View 1 (cartoon, rainbow, N blue to C red):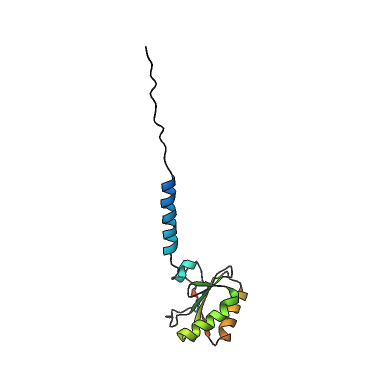
View 2 (tube, rainbow, N blue to C red):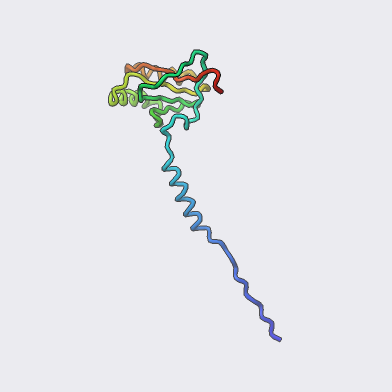
Length: 135
């Protein structure tokens, strides 16, 4: 009696192509992500009882995060280049004022720094606040 043992095929999953596809998808999503909308920066402006709704006439917006990062028109700008960036954009776009959006947890020194840099370049500063009843 001859006993034959059947060879079982070893099944395996090749994960290299899966990793390649996932890497391409991650790069695609990272490259297509936009920060044009200021709401994507997760900044919560402080509330005020006298807040009114106004339409922004200018295109120059400076956002300050609670960690002290500066974004000019949704583009990160280091603190040492903020003044030059504001002056350059103000000249190129003929803007006379800027809207300052600061998180309610932002240190006052960062907002004062932005106001100081804006005034050095002759820009009027408007603060963006939310209605006190909004949560």
